[in-house]
Image (cartoon, rainbow, N blue to C red; front, side):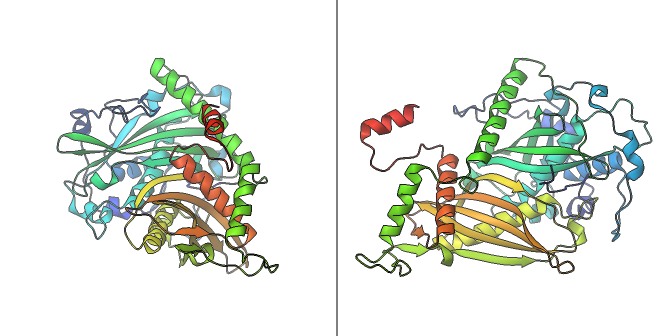
Length: 467
């Protein structure tokens, strides 16, 4: 469990939500109960939990978290000690079971009524900034963890002796982005959908009410881990017990995702050799970019309408500031996600020479925390293209000038769609070939496509698709 991005208990200075003080009443949601996400199409997510519970806006959420964990305003180079809370950590058998409905709630981003908040979410085209939405999803996931964890023996005057951290974001699929309006409220709803001993899967839905109709925007899966008060060890969470048939169906889907995560990790091309058909793809790439009948394999040629991968990247350096820290003086995970989405959008736009549409973010991994006194390097690579789709891999890397240490902290995979056929990106080195194969897998998974194998007949392809 050391490969974590420490979110702590809350974002210390959520300044954009705390100066306004505007609160959205719960009756706003109750009077407009959203329809289940994705019910207009069969996508495997028709089991959507709903309730009338509303937590207000994110400002209300931040305040609630502060009250639960007793976090003070003001930056200190040495974080406020929480060692005295360790004795209040319960044992697993002391925790009561919880249902999914216990954690379910909705939060409103009041873009229609609050011009100041609206400014944070609009880009120069007047559309919604999806990087900003991702940042808020991370905070919302932390709040759902708080709603799930119940310690019946904790004294009322003692803060919650827990820290919640993000382990990974499994998949975030986007729909109807082109229909999103920056002057209509956005609703975030979600709940805990699976638990282990200290881990929790959070399912989140994003919808927007426009012209009397709910528009599906995003469904996302966060895998969170409960840590002790000082973030030095794991902490148990309340077991989840499905309360009805809907919750049982959701639990079953979540268990499948858990198995898929374990398989994907072991079968990653970065951890094990490429498959046989992928090795054939790599060999074909080498033949296409090598001069025929020339033994100098270091000399490469670029086919028409193609670009080298090494020339298809953008890097930026960021100096994080305390306003984006958490209780442990590490950078808030949502902030890093926003930066990754926005530099990826820049790279995709430059590559396409146009404005791409974000289709999917998959497998966001949090390998280690980013301290507030380090520099953050973000690099977005175009690693695969196919027709009008572009697959990016964005890597976050930190530099600690005091210790001289540098290491990778996060990896993001983002799929964009263009309105035209794009140039093909090609690898030159073996490392880039592995990235190319990895990007190909990510694109196929994002689009829910079956891979095609070189040399297959139509009958063999049919057999492969039916497996």
